[in-house]
Image: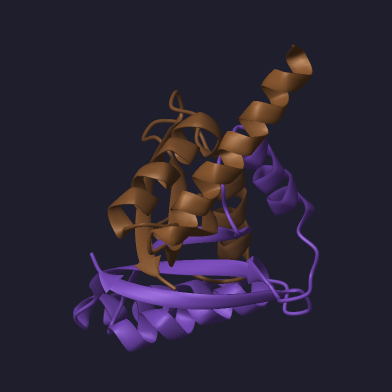
Length: 107
Length: 107
């Protein structure tokens, strides 16, 4: 029974994938920038700023952020954006301490 | 002798700073994006990509980068850009393994 089920699932996934390929899919690059929220301490950025000042540079402030560039195929820029936003919420950012923004460009 | 020298240096630095303030200084925010060069292994990005795939997301590739947002005062956008480029070369990026780009915006 289980084997049959797995087989059917695999077949239906293959079918869905073929359907997806028949629709026109476009390549997009989505950029996710993950920043610490205001008020969250960033000791790495503080150290970097102090090191720059020790080298003689004058600056008012420095913030650090993580950037992820994701290549994916999607039907539209909106579709790509939605999927990448879900990726950010589920894995790339921690909503307690991070803000993020997503930018989508055609490849 | 040393004390005199230090005193003079401090005085001249104060003088230079005053001169700088008399010239019209504008606030800029420079963004430095530091990426690994093509061919340099990025195990963190690979792990992130695999985790996303395990969550059911489909993606072609994922690259990670560091982003620094630096607030500074400068006479012009070109001046700000040059100073931040020097910061990138001297501290933020490692030229052996990193590429970087700098974007400057008025605050």
